[in-house]
Structures are given as structure tokens and as C-alpha cells.
Image (cartoon, rainbow, N blue to C red; front, side):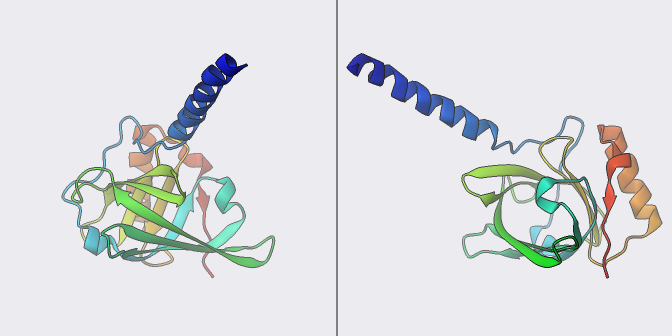
Length: 179
């Protein structure tokens, strides 16, 4: 029995560690590249979610915003808010983002439930930091963000074309209502 415990406990802990590690994907989809010469300070502030895929954690949500601010330790506070139009209630989720590499590369990892981290990669942004295309760790996660509740058609088309070239099925995007 002691021999079994000596083997079973480390094996169980190893398997658990692999599960946690595999759920902490902070990668970037093949074919995508994070913005370089990124100015994190200009990215801070409020963003409106213009489009996304249908994620379980944002199901039935309209009026979705994300507000980014700098924490004293240099990480970024993430404050996501939205309105569940089915349950008729406001929801909020606070998380933390950290740069994967240098702060001038828009490749971050974000966590709302530590120790689980996910990729957050700004793969396109206009020069004035008004519109952003954000990829997750895989082709399952994509967001179009704007500083205002709407986005010019030219930027929308630019982001959709870029996402398609990477391999995203942009026909599945949900266009978020802001009212």
C-alpha cells in the first residue's frame, strides 16, 4: 500500500499539473503576429466590444466594455462589464494582464481565475489607438474593439480581412449592441 501511494500521489499531481498547464495557453494563433512598437500607456482606458465569437462567459451579453488601467506592480487591471439581456442583469469581471515578453510587443496573458491564464494578443491597431483587433490563444477567440460604440466600415473590413487571412471564420462573429 505504501508503494502504491508513493507512485499514485506523484502521478496524480503530475497529471493535474499537465491539465492546469494545458489550460493556461498564452500562445498566439499560427499566422498571427502581435503588434510591435506597442504603447501600453496609449492602450489603457475604456474600450467597447464591437464583435466577438459566442463565448460561454459572454453569452447573451450586450453593452460589453473593457477598461484597462495600470496596477502599481506594472501589470494591467482588466475590468470587463456587460449586460445579460436574458437574465436582465449587469455583470462584471475583474482580471489581470501581464506582458508575455517586452512591453513594446502587444502579447499579453490575462487571468480572471488564477492560476489559469489565456492569451490576449493585439494583432492590429490603428495609429491613434482608437480601434483594435485582438486574438486569443487559438482561432476560437477574437475581439474587435473600439473607443466608441461604433466602428468605421473601413476599419471593420480591414480587421475582418486580416482575421480571415489568419484562419478565423468571421461569419461566426457576433456584433455587440450598445444602447
